[in-house]
Structures are given as structure tokens and as C-alpha cells.
Image 1 (spheres, rainbow, N blue to C red):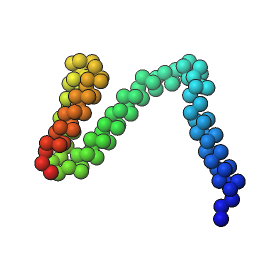
Image 2: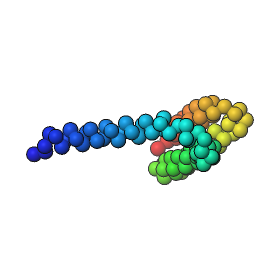
Image 3: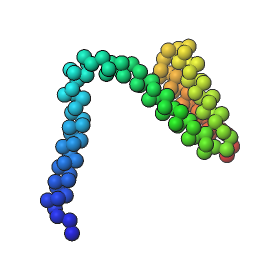
Image 4: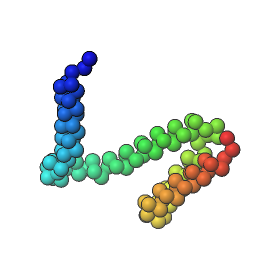
Length: 109
């Protein structure tokens, strides 16, 4: 049987680690704002992460569908064109997502 003090200790340790991880950005904010490496990562990393998430998601969805990657590719091209023309991220994301969902639901399968 598990000791109650052990369970309480584990929960307390998890709570402290979670609190520390959530508080760390606020504690280190002054240092992070002045650091050139962090500033450079702030410019580059969001785009890189979004690109990787997009590629991973589109490739996974395309592999599961018998029709191939066409709905994903059309939705991605639509988002790129909308973003390029309108410079409105919310509009691009909403219309691209809507187009993708419509294409996925209208294709027989």
C-alpha cells in the first residue's frame, strides 16, 4: 500500500515545479527583454514553429485520406494568397480553415 505522506509529497513537488515553470517568464522578463538572442528568437521562432506545425498537420491529414493532399494544399495556398493580399492574419486563418473543412466534408469518402 502507498504511504499517504509519499503521495502528498509527490503532489506538492509537482505543484512547486508547475508554479516555478509558470512564474519563470515573469521573473526573468527584465533579463529576457534585454537579451539580443531572445530578441532574435522572438522574430524568427514563431514563423518557424507555425511552419512546422502546418507541415506536420497537413502531411498527417493527407496520409489519412484516399484523395491525397489536395484539400490541404488548396487551403494552404488560399491562406498564403489571402495573407499576402490582405495582411490580415485572422481573415486568412478563418477563411483557410473554413475552406479546408468544407473541402474535407464535401469530398466523398
